[in-house]
Length: 298
Image 1 (cartoon, one colour):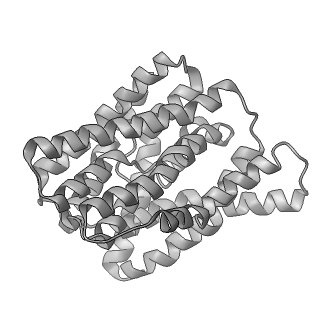
Image 2: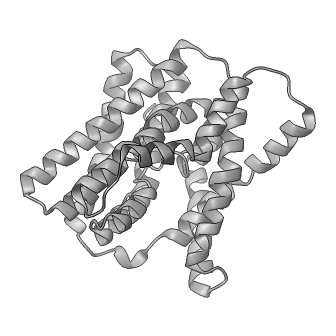
């Protein structure tokens, strides 16, 4: 795991270096993310689901994931009430504490640690919780605490237009069915783009100037996301008797740093952007320590 995290950090630093040197402009990261989300990620998810076999353990994972996210959101909300944060700060703190980077960072790490054959567990964790809930409840929380507005129609539209969701649906529809070899090979080529491009994209997106701002709250959010979240998952996994690889993959996903999309929500709904950026960066840095430690105990 240490070697894998070191390689991931190196790719992230490469992205940061290219941004600093002007090789790639930070505003160009949107093009890179579009390529990942619309082509690479759906291909990766489609292949993972198409090659999988539905089993009881797999069907339990969305339940664990959803309950873990709601647990973190509830704790974060309680913290903001306790310290009497203003709405913009509270909204940023809650969404950044509750939603993890389960796809952009989670998928590459799961593939590296557990192999592509076990990625389907991460797909179920991400798509049925962080993905769907993040696109719906995440936007709703941001709108409730911020200055923008959102509607049920808009939220449903975001989910329907989210390409990874279609990768999941299509994977289910043709699960186990024979596909032309050239099509499978094409999807494998597209899937192979995800791991390196995601890490470089993270490096391009990171805002190092966020460090030093709202540090107490940022570290509090890191505690919820990197420590409490996996602890909740462990308790739920024992209650639902989820063990082995399904448990280990779910635990890794639960321990992911904060989701990058929360920064987009913070900007759109006028939440505390600096706090959100600080939480994203700090959780990512600290996860290089917490993730190997968590996996060393299982």
